[in-house]
Structures are given as C-alpha cells and as structure tokens.
Length: 237
Image 1 (tube, rainbow, N blue to C red):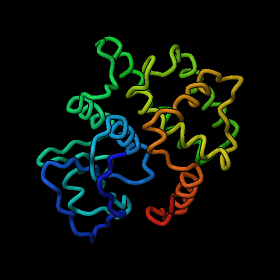
Image 2 (cartoon, rainbow, N blue to C red; image 1 turned 120 degrees about the vertical axis):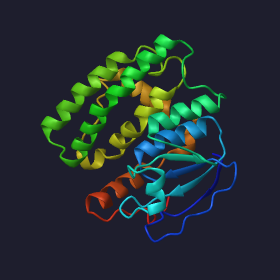
Image 3 (cartoon, rainbow, N blue to C red; image 1 turned 180 degrees about the vertical axis):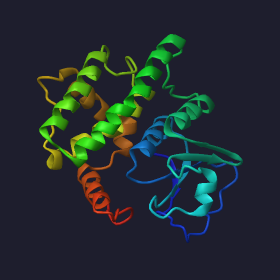
C-alpha cells in the first residue's frame, strides 16, 4: 500500500503538520470504518498518499477548519479539500481513473448508489447489535442481511468485479465478524450462503488484504471506545 508516511493521532494541542505540495493527504483514524472505505479505494488504485491521524475525542482546531463536522475521512491536496467517505471515493474515482470501481452504465451506477444510500440503516443496526447483542437485535440483523443476500446475483455487489458498493459495505461486515466473541452473532452459512461466499471473496481482494486490521485489534479498540478511553495508538498491530 503506497502510504508515504503516517502520524500518530494528533490532538487539539498538536501543531499542524505542513503538507507537501502536490501530495495527497488523508485525515483518518486507524479504526474508523468510514475512513477504511477510502483507504480501500486508495489501495485498490495504488494511489500514493500520506496519513494524518486525528484523535476524534480531542480534535485540533486546524482539522475542524478542514471539516467543520469533525469527521474522517478528509482528503486534502494543495487547496482542494473533500470529505464524507462516499464523496471522497467518488472524487478519487473521477481523478484517478486507473483500476475503475464504478460501472460505465449510468443505470447500473444509479442502482448501486441506491443500495449504498440504504446502508445507513444497516450500519446503524450494526452499532446497536455491538452495544446490546440481544436476541431481538440479532434477529433484526438477520432481517437486514436477508435483503443483501437477495441482492447478490453476481460474485460481488458491484458485479463480476469488486467495486465501490462492496468497499462501502465491507468495513461493517468485517467488524461484525470481529465482534462475534462479544456479540455471539454469526452470519449463518445456512441462511446466508451467498453473503458468506461474498465474504470469502472479499478476503481475497488485494486491497482488503493490504489494509485489513486483525479482528482482535478491532475488538480491543471497540472495548476501549465503549469504556470511554479509546486506544488510538496503544494497540500494536
């Protein structure tokens, strides 16, 4: 993965690291699933970039000037700043055409964007399941996954090859697998054979292999976050 350099998680008192002219910069947080979406795209397209990690509990003012929402990912290159993961990824797709991740067919793109827009409810419920893994929450997740099981008609959600839709969904599926020890929730092979086959294929995607965080580390960070003291830099991978 072409990461040129990476900082620790900078805080409010941290000085602003001067950018290098012409170099693409990603403001991130190591364990953020939204930032992971953009990291996957950067890796897939083999785009060189630097990473400035942000402590999201103690954000520098200079970061808030770049994104008043205070969220990652944020892309910056010279005087251009873009944020929100889906927008960042569309922007990268537009300016770096190599290894395309979108269909050339406008209708196919529109249908995939509809699915991406609907991921919000799935993402919200994945957080609910992680917080309170009740039998009701598990069955509700099964109901959400029924929808995606039925959508899978080809090897990937994006078609015959991996695409943006797959990368937009993957970080939460990855975490669902990592949190199994805590939640007791498993994506049933019997109920979701196509989803499980998709998961196996995703683990073989080069960008996923290059950027994957071990499940134990995702779980450790989630525990620390729940306790109110996120271990941004203390978890060695």
